[in-house]
Length: 113
Length: 110
Image 1 (tube, helix red, strand yellow):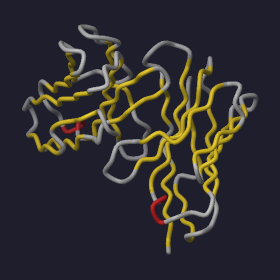
Image 2 (image 1 turned 90 degrees about the vertical axis):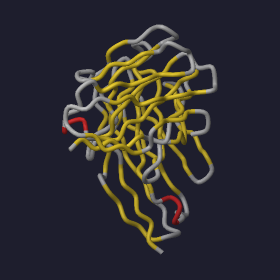
Image 3 (image 1 turned 60 degrees about the vertical axis):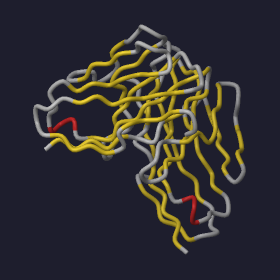
Image 4 (image 1 turned 120 degrees about the vertical axis):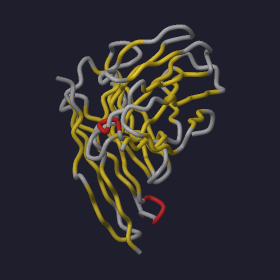
């Protein structure tokens, strides 16, 4: 069964600190992996997208890594800011047409001052 | 989230009532989707469309119907609302590998 598991479920860190969020997947055949940020009460917004051949991709203070062999991805946030408080969702796309996106349950990140 | 608009933003329904959620996108995308998001769960696909006049069932289609009469609009209908349909509904459209989500519609069925 295609699944995406994220950890931790929730995380609280102090402003300025770094953190890493994890995503493990069993989706096959793999097409690409996306990380989204979802602010409370808003729709998800894309942070990064990586295909099979990409190991790392950055978007400002966000850096995503992908290990297609172990089917793991991480999202590293550097020098966190209060505005980083949100849910972060890992989404894996399978090579099965337009509809096959498998969503993780998300990690709820809280940045405290 | 520019370009994908959902209406209404909030709605409270009584069990058995019907309603329609409207999703509109101005990016000329072929693919459109309706998802629901429930606490502790990832977004789940209700229905999707690969182009004007086409619709298909997703992961959790029961109790919902959709229509794509115009390319820019994707409608999600609840014919007889049930409390289990209390959720946040997100519409999305896709062009190649980029997916754009709407701001969400909060639906409560009492």
